Image 1 (cartoon, helix red, strand yellow):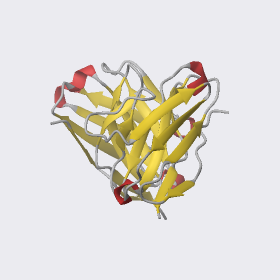
Image 2 (image 1 turned 45 degrees about the horizontal axis):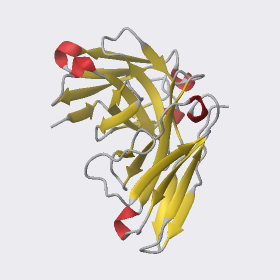
Image 3 (image 1 turned 120 degrees about the vertical axis):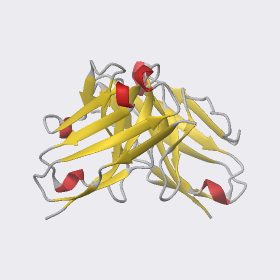
Length: 111
Length: 119
């Protein structure tokens, strides 16, 4: 089954660290396709946060980092700030779909 | 500056048709894959369709195959999504995005166009 599974929600206090997981399968992440992460603030279009598993576009703070191993990937945010409160999505290509796949999204709440 | 601007959204009845447009500027449009992604109200992102630089390859998510058609006009720097046989579950904000074929990431997004399908 071609899905990317993310936790629906995570939370943390300002200054803390949180990790969002993205679990796929052998037809997407496990097949070697890159994982990308997007941040979506309320009422706005998604924005690339991490691409190519662990690369930050210019302008993205180094508090954001990504990693990938096997059929899973993760996004880590350190030194949480109130402005990080948003929805986060992982995305990869799936060979059985011949198209892209998004995770279900994770809502980050900064307590 | 790269800009993508969608237009053509609206309120339709089930079974209706609509064509979305996406006007691109600030980059060489004919050299990039382009994609449509949608987001139902309060839900997550769903990839809908993409099209190769020259329009020779097109791919769709299963739920829209046979109903939606993606196309492009490189002379007009424009991307389109023709949507036929619309259903309530097609209600969503539709985003066009530039796709980097090297690793399938979407590096620039439009602001989105709302399509509402309701009796």
